Image 1 (cartoon, rainbow, N blue to C red):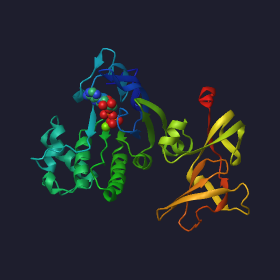
Image 2 (image 1 turned 180 degrees about the horizontal axis):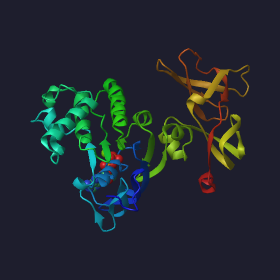
Image 3 (image 1 turned 90 degrees about the vertical axis):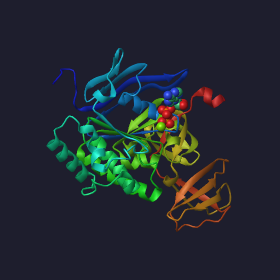
Image 4 (image 1 turned 120 degrees about the horizontal axis):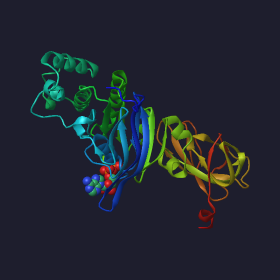
Length: 357
Ligand SMILES: Nc1ncnc2c1ncn2[C@@H]1O[C@H](COP(=O)(O)OP(=O)(O)O)[C@@H](O)[C@H]1O
Ligand SMILES: [Mg+2]
């Protein structure tokens, strides 16, 4: 059973995995690893290669290059393609893919053929309890709500005790109100089961609120893998910063940890030198009525959402930044304001060719 070069601490590891369809690169050197028992979101816009990456991990597609290990065991690589049924991976799809003509119990016991009847009964009972559906084993799939069907799909994936669970946009069929609750339930179930899991999603709020780590995938590549907090506070590039949350950029000049910018002197989270774009999140800006009209920044627009509002401020230099404020503030359009940035901030070097262009 034990092989000297395996590492049970690593739930899954991809190294430079590539997959092309015709001339199109769906995955280009995808690399990341995930510790056993952790939840990861693969987050990126539609078409960036998320589903392809999951299918490569599951074994439904073979890699063109690179290697994949699951639970410390190589499953794909040069000259190696372990078939899906030998990978100990459970999948949950967007449309749940429950078998419509058999009941919940039979749906869940489907993958447990190797167990004897008694062990199978006990395992199905355990996972039904885990997903909170004890007593509903006799129901047919169409007799369940969307959220319940989702939990059956999860129970079916968990039943054979796989090394890894893969979930492809699992909440997109649920309406918005239900989605938030089901997400939290699914997270709790996976954590209780001690599962290692990868969620694919294009919904950043979902990714940030659901998992331990987020891998941002853009155009077939993982650009950054970090905890939700780190990803939001310290995006590695302008591209990632723009993709995650709302981002304002203002020009500045870095002197190590100190930045001189249009909005005054700022502290940088990481040392930077020379011309930079400074990332300013809307919620890290404060505005107040300006004592004078001279050189003032001006409120241009307000979008009121109830729990907060987004105020566009045109800086005296011409740029516009968005500011997020609580619902109690009222500013008039064209009102002169002063702007204060709450730091420290992230800043990205502007390369010379970019500046000339
Ligand atoms: N079987 C396939 N044949 C040809 N092109 C494909 C196939 N699967 C995916 N692609 C292409 O690969 C790219 C990534 O697709 P996909 O992995 O489904 O992205 P995502 O899940 O992030 O939306 C897209 O350009 C898509 O059209
Ligand atoms: Mg997809």
